Length: 227
Image 1: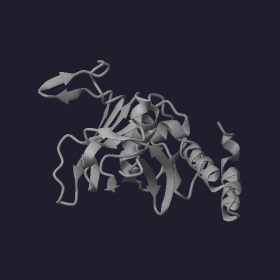
Image 2: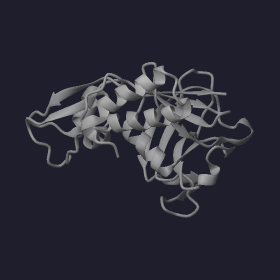
Image 3: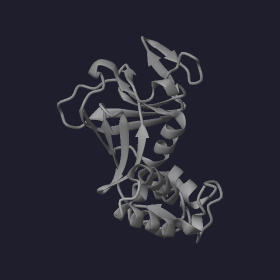
Image 4: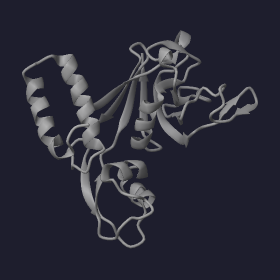
């Protein structure tokens, strides 16, 4: 973990090294890690846009999140606050910038993007034989510890036959051209399935990756799936 007090300075150093074209692959990895450290820290960022908000009487993290289009989980972690003990007058960092997700089936990569900046890349698993559809979608629902509905059965979270991992984010089509039922982004503890095209069509991330993404994205954000 990087020192939170030095995160903005570290980002400037990485940007200078990138301009000098130093070891691009390693710089990418370091930059993505730093982007996440900044996002989950109290530091104000330009990308994604963020600002300070002072807690008012009656505020909750859920309410603040809905007001600014962010998540209570991101507010909680970036500010290190207890949602049950929110103090009136406390200054919170609030992320106001918008996110979108871009997925490459052929590369098995999911990108978290704000504006024109790729904040992070996640290795994923996608559908075999082109079963993961391409097109424009959005996140229609988010579920922690999801049950799996399979062939008329309800397989509870934690059951060995439940393949959805710790988080589920439902996809729905927004381009009006793609039929979509039962597809989503979910977790897995099967590392061998990541980087491959062998699912029934859903997008898989390792559980720790999908949990990180789940804290960031809101219902309604755009998801673009490309070849």
